[in-house]
Amino acid sequence: MAKTSWAVDPLHSELGFKIRHLMISNVSGSFGKFDISVDTTSDNFTDAKIIAKIDPASINTKNDQRDEHLRNSDFFEVEKYPEVLFQSTSIETKDDEHFMLNGDLTLRGITKPVQLNVEFSGVIQKDPWGHARAGFMVSGKINRNDFGLTFNSVLDTGGLALGEEVKIQGDIQLVKQQVAVPV
Image (cartoon, rainbow, N blue to C red; front, side, top):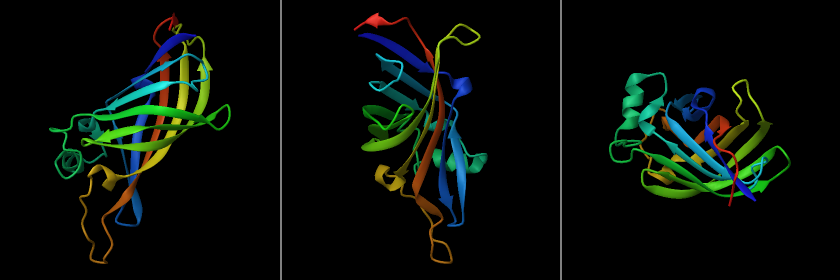
């Protein structure tokens, strides 16, 4: 089998999240800087080895004051933990387009297993610039408390300002990096 390497196209990819706010709505955010690399021996990616590195300092919730708070020690503590890391451990095939991606997520120095739903949109062998590309939609959930993100405030009504569950979503486009080489 030959191995092929793929890398994220940051101009055509997004990585975001949603969290419950004030018990009545969600706040959305995204990360502007992240890198994803994939090694696989097949165009269906069922044996892919995936590494995603996220720069938590690139967080954007469309509110500068909130973003600064998220960067400090109450949340991401970006000075001490400048990277969020995901490394795949296995992929479970549901059908030709749907997979369960298992991996280890390291956030604030804490590593926990996570599962992500992946919808595979397919591969085009030649885009207008001559490159092969693959597309994916990724979703999942984590409990922020599992990673030491425990900051919260109690509302006058007794509820909490922030939910514990964080929904992860991504639209990812990969570009083939090299001609397949023997493993």
